[in-house]
Amino acid sequence: MTTVLTTAMAVSTALAAPINTEEQYSASARAVQLSKENLLIDTHIDVPYRLTKNWDDVSKATEGGDFDYPRAVAGGLNVPFMSIYIPAQLEQTPGASKQLAHRLIDSMEALAWRAPDKFAMAYNVEDVMQQYEQGLISLALGMENGSPMEGDMANLKEFYDRGIRYITLSHSLSNHIADSSYDIRRQWDGLSAFGKELVVEMNNIGMMVDISHVSDDAFWQTIDISKAPVIASHSSLRRYTPGFERNMSDDMIKALADNGGVIMINFGSSFVTQAANRWRDMLDQQIEQVKEEFGEASKEAEKRIAELRSDNPFPYATLEQVLNHIDYVVDLVGIDHIGIGSDYDGVGDSLPVGLKDVSSYPNLVQGLIDRGYSDADIKKILNENILRVWREVETYAAHH
Image 1 (spheres, rainbow, N blue to C red):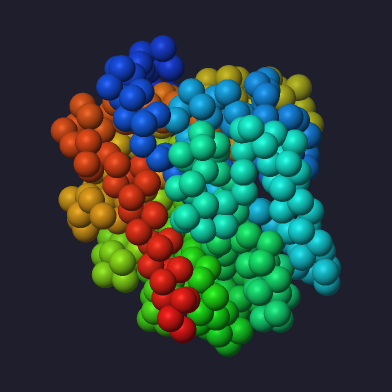
Image 2: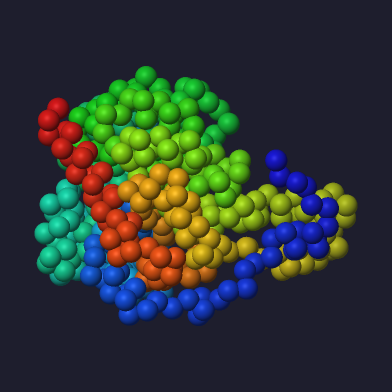
């Protein structure tokens, strides 16, 4: 339960931003080399939806956003899973989710078509390996929110044929497939009947099942049903954000590991630290208190709210705190069940100090080196763990 703070000073003390600055992080030549000479896979980058709001040519350097080609090359990123993100409310309009999904896939195909010397679509592990040898960045696709299924299993085949290689079953609201961790309505107590069938069919077709965003009950039911390894494409640990159901508990991580799956760590500060996770609620509480005391439209309220905002900047997480999540998973279930799912371009201005965009992966690698991870361990985190899962999902489908 969040403790209600009663003074602006208390909020400021509780939410003090880290002292570290971006310039304090620098990667050694070895860290840069490890990042650039090994496949580096990030399972969740929100470029497609970013470009629907403000189109930009990410095959060139861009002023905005967290991803573009030059920064990806600088960071060593070879395989971004581009998120085909579907806002939850679109499910209320028949056909809208499916239409947007196709448009977003089109945009990634167009990017690869416009810059064939830089990008190529990737539909399987073999594509990734071949394109890596050719020096191309592979654009893989994951669908964030299964609402485009629209209750029709034929849509699963349609989107598989278009390149979708994982589906996040739900998003910020419960949908016709699964309950959401963010939604107090638990209409299915986990998965719907269609959702349970969908997990089976995703196994059979060779598509990874993603349990980021789903409720705990939906997670446990998915683990019970799936015959192939399951992923959390962009989740972090509840150990560091108690009460935040969107992250994973220790028991869930153990079950995911027993299933052979991987948790891909989300870099967003609110996923990484309790202070950032609670910042908005705590600040909003203080603002409401000011409005009640001085009147919502008063000059005094306006002044004090401005002071509150100024005195309580967002408490960015740090690279070290992201590394703590990785360490914890490794200590809990071993090195084989951890990877990177940054949520770049998906968490706004909430990224940790030291990990501000896709050029920053060498900083993460440097942190792993500093904490005693071997080159072999780092390779598992960068690519081998998620490639193993992807191959196992492909293999299961080939035999069923």
